[in-house]
Length: 252
Image (cartoon, rainbow, N blue to C red):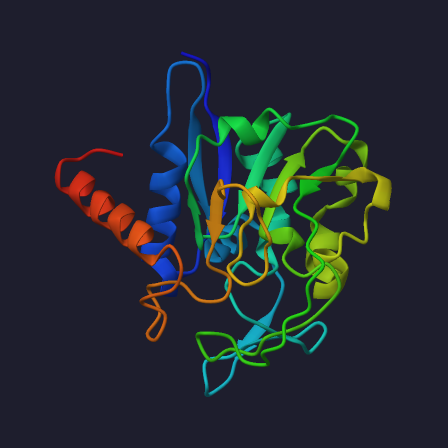
């Protein structure tokens, strides 16, 4: 059996079920020829390792605020996702291609198909959305922040061996403002490869003629009150049922 490829999933304690479903959907297609090892990126573990020391505060409404740039953000992994370069190489002793994905994804096909798209000329590959949110408040009552290249960093194929990604060290991760990180300012545009939109389908945002390979519940997932009946909610809930059935049987 080939060694599994590490896939890093952004973890937020408030969305544990979302993480579990994402993990299940990534691993359910594992085989002898291709398998993934899902690793949650937890900000406290990154802080304990010394890789992540970015400071934030939480106000009375539960809104996160970044002390560096004074901007609001919505999840525990909003910035820590960019620790993937240092964490994968130093802690996991990994090289080559890896992937980061937000926890609010549901994969419908083997992620092996996605890794077949990797091209070593690129430092990062992602779906290149051209979208500006119209809502000012997100589904969890957190501030919705609009910026160029919104959602590009929600799923990233990441080339650990690319020389430009060496720039993403401790200082860049912890001392750059959020917009610089999420818009890939450390890279030339020519170093950002494009993935087909079917790998990051957002209801009401993505236009597709074929079936999505991965559903991104960016506009509200069925684990949030008031979003129980969003598109693909039944499929997500079925996967959640499988998660807990497997836990009872000590599978996955």
